[in-house]
Length: 356
Image (cartoon, rainbow, N blue to C red; front, side, top):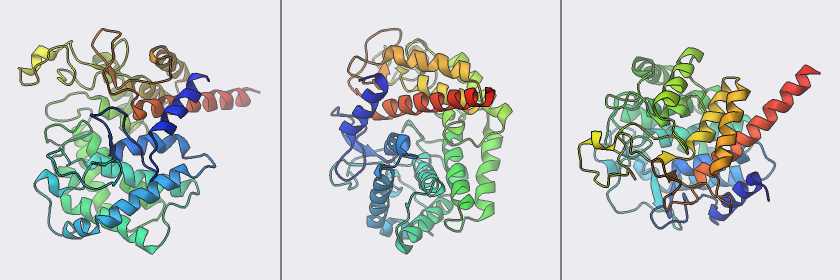
């Protein structure tokens, strides 16, 4: 098998009988994250198989089970993290886990709304009946109740709470996509509130992070930025966060830093941050979104160079080392490899057809 086939095989192994995906087979990541499943099923968006629909049908069933929570938070704003829609679930039962976690993750909810709308856009039957539509409407109401545009959340990396441009942008993208497909009622002011916050914050990720890998999501898959801002974010990520075997999440990131002390002064981690492998195909996809196939090819080739012999892409490599951590393979990373490879191949083919 070539690396593309191996990446698909990784996703096959991580797919659970109910249709959602393990983040990784490792003990630490033997759970289902909404966000990871969103990315892991994206390669099937335009395929003839039913995997995309199956995944979203199970997600909608999960939300049906949690309708009581959605009903509460149509009018009562969540406070403690456990009151929010959870980001992570038991791999087999898909029930909420009774343990402390940074569940205030608006970007994960926005991603699911975006994924639902994208499925409907390409002609897949994501919404099976009126009840599914009612659930999606209640998720919109939940985000309104949260006041997502000004509600500090844990963000893509599930860390301390602050307002993240990547989280606000994900919700804006999800709401806009629903509105464009006329799936449910999305008040225009609800999108406008988020867009204003987003434009006020950019190009920064948050008060504490001038630049963050998570911001690439605003370019791909969400594509919600004016070109000059997208180019600015891409340039800042490449200048500040790009490393040999991946992209660090943000400067002074302590997760799997070479300095084993997460309670230390953050500056001790500067230059010691772990290199996340999915950053390379993500950069390729962003350059493809902006029409630069040469840069896209460059990052795709760099991705190919860090794939392990069995086709796995690790979650991360330790700073400046060929050693990776135990969360391998990371399904999200292999999915990004598939998306970058297939999008690049399609783009090049279309360019060749145009030339002739």
